[in-house]
Image (cartoon, rainbow, N blue to C red; front, side):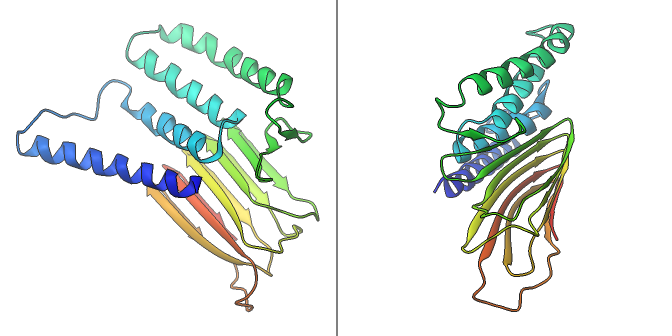
Length: 227
């Protein structure tokens, strides 16, 4: 349900921008998307949609914080030097708050602070200014949410136990995601490519009744591949 709502939000955003541009072309109003710091919207909007789609988690809150700080800096509201000094401490503080109150949010943290289980049993992976490689063990896999900002993620599901259809939501901003899937599943990708794209390179499963991994990908200056 949240995934459909997120798709509706993306659609509304594109329709709104298109209408404003059309009105500007016919001199009905003045519209200019390229204000100071306009590029930070490529970080802020996907993180907001990720919050709507997956709820609050460490990754989308950190991404939203970074985007807002960069926007305020570009607008001259906050000095860029102050932003540079606040960026890393803010990330550490948010992670610390997440660890302290993790039980209150009903989420179980794994060994890494970048991976936890949400209320629907889906894992959450976050990669910001870094690269990660996760090999899922031979256990039941119930889906995942992936967020990468200026980073990369490889999620290896070759050993995962998948007995039913699952959903993987991924937001890629200036980065890349590789999802390695087992041979006994089908893969279907639905993507919103914004100067990026998603490709299904997984070997076709010969069993039409096999479980399906549905990958919903939003790629902004980045890409996602299933292999």
